[in-house]
Length: 214
Image (cartoon, rainbow, N blue to C red):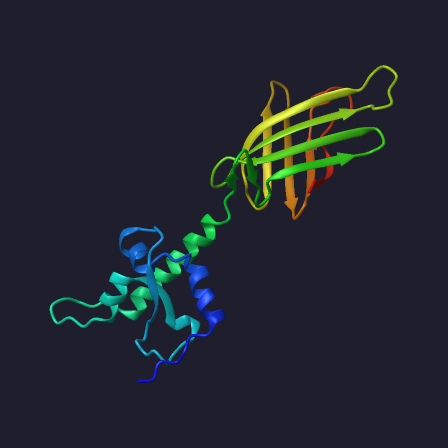
């Protein structure tokens, strides 16, 4: 059977999607270490270079997959395709996380600094990811910037899970509750609150629309 040369773009796609991790190592042992290996043809037809027929395998598992044994059940094409799918999903999820470089962290997702500015007030919100779906929210608001008696200000700090692109804070008080919902869409936050008068100081509030600072 004549081997058809693999297109360079397809080769790059297989390598980048796997990050040179062997899908059988991952599927059998949760081993996601970088490996030396080859691109395998899952139907064992070297002329079939369709992307769905290709997978990066370490040398040992490539040899094992291509071999035929009468003593044990061989690895099947469907089995390896399942492992490949699981590996690609795990890599995609891992690569979404913040990357630590020196003293700085590259932010992903909803993390960042958001501001709201009007003639009489300024508010800021900072969102930091804690783990898979937990976020730290820090806020500061000030009202009455031109007030001759001085502005009123307040601060906010809480942790919350992201639910339907919304972060929610609630403070249960003796006679009433304060709630704040942060609805996140792209680089904007729509903050809506039900507040106890004077919770952050006279007229100070986090209510309104925020834009993320790039």
